[in-house]
Image (cartoon, rainbow, N blue to C red; front, side, top):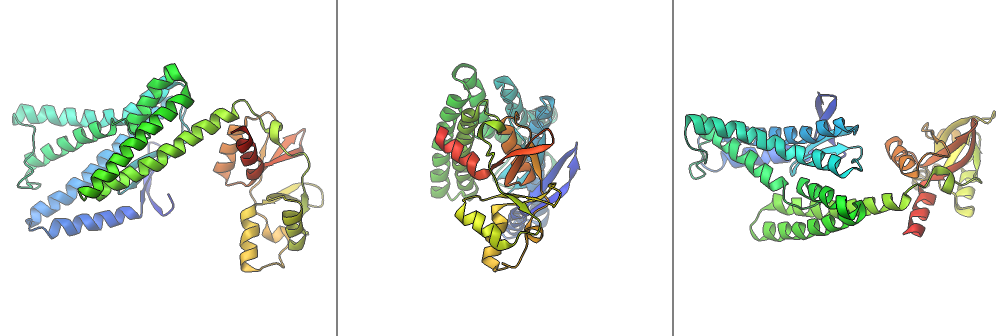
Length: 359
């Protein structure tokens, strides 16, 4: 989600728009003014698209605010040309909590559609918009377009194509009887089948956005299945179970050649750096080492090379929480502390090795 512009924070949740959304707006403006529509119709069409994405944001807030009820934090909400995404820090383990969070988004669209539908029926007696004359400049017709769009969002998001809302709902219901891992595998397989159908239909009917959505679903369904399987493998594993008790303690004055020797000959990839008093000063992730090799800046010391990121954990902390902490901090290595001393380390490589062995 790099390259996202922050639009502001609402209800404590940042709302961002990906830079590619600007390309969509340019395309919408070009389409509006190049198809022979009146100026008022073109402006109405552009406004319609903007309100469409406003409804998408409200949909995502439905997920985010419901998640908050169950103690789940939302990192942000990001808008892109293929829709919105509320990036939750995690999903509750309890199936019905996941069910409530997943269905909350579509219910927002249903609520908007219900309010508009009742109003339209009471005052006009007709719900269905006229798609032939593109009357985006007529207020009543415009409201019918908004009603139709929200009902379409409600129905589309309930398609059981994991990880869309419908797929998450399916997974939560299956989890009650089958367990989370098996339910995720089934929902992921169904989601990938739908994704292939979206791509094929989109290609043959020149629906580029639907094809992109299909590709997104296909990749995300596989990623979610892998992530759930790995979480199950970790189970009750703690930091102490897989930490390395033998590790290099680099000093601030150590030269780059010393670091390279440890990196290549002894097979360590990430390092902790200590001062002359034995206090932790920083860390050197593998990425920094590789960058220096590319730029040929081999005259650096550990102090010049290190990152100020110092992530620590307790021996009894669950490994899945350690992984989450590393992801949030952007850390390549974690020090395991006991009694104020660092007694071991965990880094990405020995965690990945452990997961491969368990798999």
